[in-house]
Length: 234
Ligand code: C5P
Image (cartoon, rainbow, N blue to C red; front, side, top):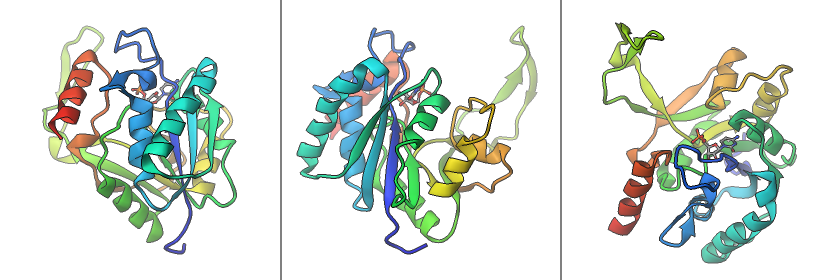
């Protein structure tokens, strides 16, 4: 693949954010007057190779989403084509719907959660570099700090996993377009918590690059507080 292969970023932003408890979809929650969606798009627009965006939002938020996208594009002083699609009940469905808007020119597709607005540019660069060098699926990972145990339905410990082999998985997850389209085209698509999970199920090799602690996913009210502090620190 040429070093100038066009990159499309798919942003699943259709989650309801129930664990945040703010009665609005998480991507539209604001920090310092910026929605998570706008912040994430601004970050993505810093990546020069990105030439197309596909954003999945709850169906009734397709029109309001346009303002959030427009604000990020104006702030970044960029004009690139974008599509806004209706998300699904699961993240997997939201990504599947997004893939219908892919263009033949999109050689690589990076799927990046709207809920991770602080991902460093270097993580995008490393994922793209690995795709350039021929990997078909690339994910950012970080070592796990806590000890991880499995438990049964009564919350009793079953066993302890070997921490040296465990990694926490982040986004952006990068794919050669045909591979991503193929794994999502499977009939009886199983909802997975990340996109590479479908590649694993299909027996496709998944490569890793170093993720970053700043890429933490905003899920709970505490995460939002951390995100606000993190943003104000800069
Ligand atoms: O729920 P969770 O935090 O794991 O969601 C990760 C990302 O997937 C978020 O950006 C969220 O908006 C998105 N999502 C989606 N459609 C869903 C559920 C989650 O686009 N049905």
